[in-house]
Image 1 (tube, rainbow, N blue to C red):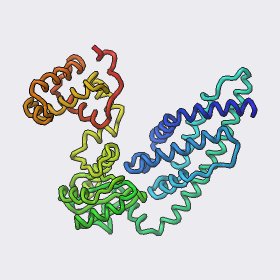
Image 2 (image 1 turned 90 degrees about the vertical axis):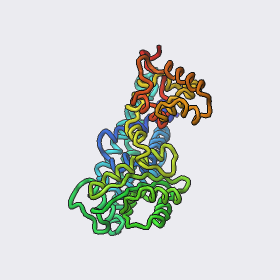
Image 3 (image 1 turned 60 degrees about the vertical axis):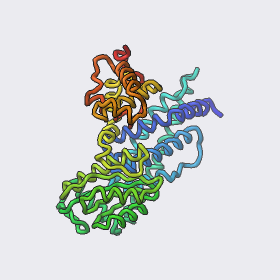
Length: 393
């Protein structure tokens, strides 16, 4: 093995240790460019796209240290098919690969160790860059071929035409009408994800027995609209149809084309929370704060950190105080009802509330709306880092 190859092996091992961070950089870079929104920001698809992106990056890093046959990865083919089915432009697919190339090339340069002979280190970087470029070019070509083949296959399909028409309505393009569903009626939207989602949706619709529209951006992701305002009946049918490993997000009833869009947006946000919390069925009305939290995790963690301070720490004392304060606020600041719900004495409630107050940042109102919101967001996101220095008093 040459010195250059040895340095590439070291760099490859270092990059594998950074695999999750590199995946986030690639996905965030694609998101910032505004490409692939149909996939990367779609609940039910996001996790799969991220997982498959991670697998591709892992194989590319491995290939840096080995001069073998060009990669042929099933993940590349699947993402290309998803892009074709969901209306992602071909150029966006190529730009996504270019974004990944840029992130990995910069990481490679940083990862190659400094050698006594600067020429050897430079040679290792050049060798790795050539291999990386060749592999990504090859995968990009395979992806575009798969993308075009999938487009050819789905164009005659009725389901694809309906999905395309639904997307136009969701984007507010063209006439607000569908020839297979009445947009002027009441709507209650659902999104369902998971291996058994198609079967679950069929069972759910038998329980509701109302006109509906269902399209499938992927085999494991369904968008459904039901022409009804009976949210409780739909929720009951969804609970009855639910299966392990399948998640359903429910929007709230709304009317007309704008309601069609609004209820769908709510269902997507509810699905994101359902997947995160591993809850089979979840309505938007029961998960709005959590949906906000997951839409901007960093902003939510900042609110938790600033509003809760040491109360957000992952300690037993903080957990007990948080639960007591959250229950107390949920009971309308009724200490006796809090004691009854927690099965403790009123004296214990008073003591725990004092503890919560001591852990909150100085000057924070324990009974404020902001504190109640931060406690609820905490339930979705979990413990945060230690409080900011000015809060640790």
